[in-house]
Image (cartoon, rainbow, N blue to C red):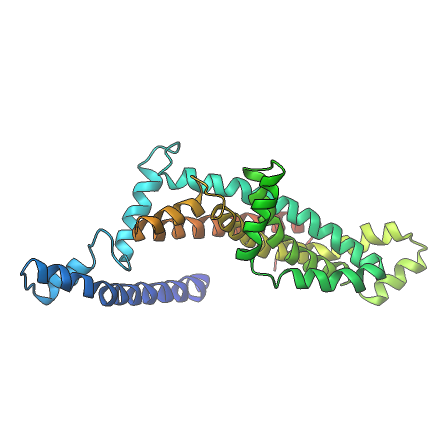
Length: 292
């Protein structure tokens, strides 16, 4: 009951407030076009009827929440999952490159972190370049990766996965560096006292200490990987995927489809973060950790 009051009520209150604000802005932004339509039809609707029309336009400037909800429900549950209009199908296309890029990014981040922690030269030379790499906008990097890989005959899933890798390796590398360096000096001295080798110190002390940092950074990385996959679909001219849905919606002014695809992307991101969090708790429990 306390958990319900402390977590559910604040979240739902904020959500309800956002929905109300959304409706208000939908009326404000759609009103000019509706006035133009009414003027052409020589109609003078009352206030309630006018507000109702602004919230039911087929191609509104800002769709109302219920329009997005209906579109999301129809394209998620009422369409065949093999249809290119199905959000499940498009989400799976994006998810496949997301998971591949996330796997590449996690592995690359861990390898870089291990090298930085154990090789002082890499710490001084590589870390500044890793940080600098994230200052380059992904929208500028993505087309270059697509063009270069297409020139050598690599198209399809891999280029999008590499863009996801570019965004996801950084939080993992930073988190793992912090985690591998988290053991206190007293514990490291204790391992020296036991005459432990460098490998034993790594596997029995540094790696267990880094696990909480790893899964925390993986939550950030998996969300970033999804963003990379969506961005990667934009310059490739992809015909399927959440990015492709956003692009086709923009071409044909289907704003309801755009918002529906955004909701689908948010749901996929939330599920991915939740799965990584559950995996982190399972690993922590398997290692003997106690629930907080």
